[in-house]
Length: 359
Image (cartoon, rainbow, N blue to C red; front, side, top):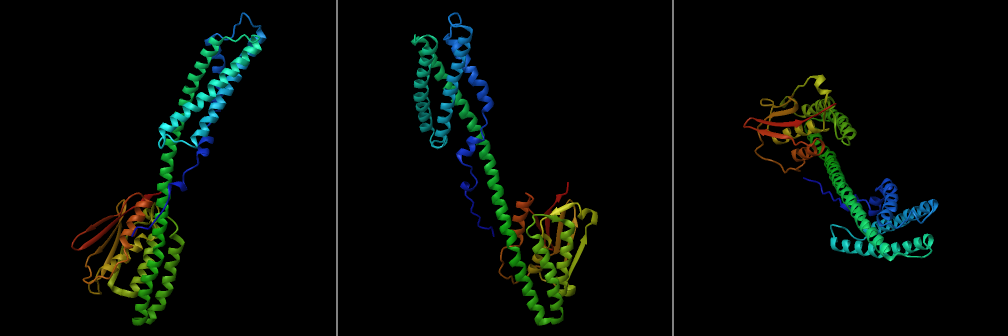
């Protein structure tokens, strides 16, 4: 049974302001603002070196660089502000119209006023309107180009951010699902163990006390490790033996466990905790067995854990809580990225559990 997980994209999305602050364009501005402040006057021949003194030329270029700075910073502020209201994907037409209107109604008036100020400072108010017109048009073209560059950078960064956020959402959802699945282990184990204990109290009171003590040890392992995604294979095999001892206390010779995994191998691999116990529990739940025809659970290694039991399904089945193999398969997919494999013949039921090797 898949847990009901509700995650909203809003929980993981950063605000528009966060995106803006992550855009580091200081170097970009330090290079291009002086470049445009010098290149545009040279292109329009606004500064006449033959008329102005050496220091006046320097001051004239300083003024045009200041002009470029004001135009750049003003349009940058407008661009960032508009991003809070319009989105390329949701409102592309409104975005384009708003950008064009904003940069036009800011750039043209401010450029003209600053250019007139330049003429008042360096030519005694003799304004060359043809130069002002040409310079304003060039500034406007440069602003549109730079705005396009900014928007392209934003789109690339947003695309990368969306990809990262989607990965974070998938990871958060997987972790939440895994946690929900692991939380189902407690009641499932307790329910089955109490049923077994109840059975032993009625039929074998002396063994019931020993069973209760062992059950406490086994449950301690579950509490200690259920919050972990992976444990050493050696730890899980040891836990399986402790759990199987409980089964032997109840069923005696009717259940048998065969382990054939070398100790050095068991120390090299990781496995989701309480996996093998669940398979043993599943085998007991769904098969008929007796002292004369015991249930034999074998655990072997072949680059994966292979768990087999002889198959003799019960003719009368009890209702299932649907935790068992579905739970185990979901945990494996979320933890290792691989599903478990099931194979069934007339006489054998096999489960193959993928492992993660320690690096």
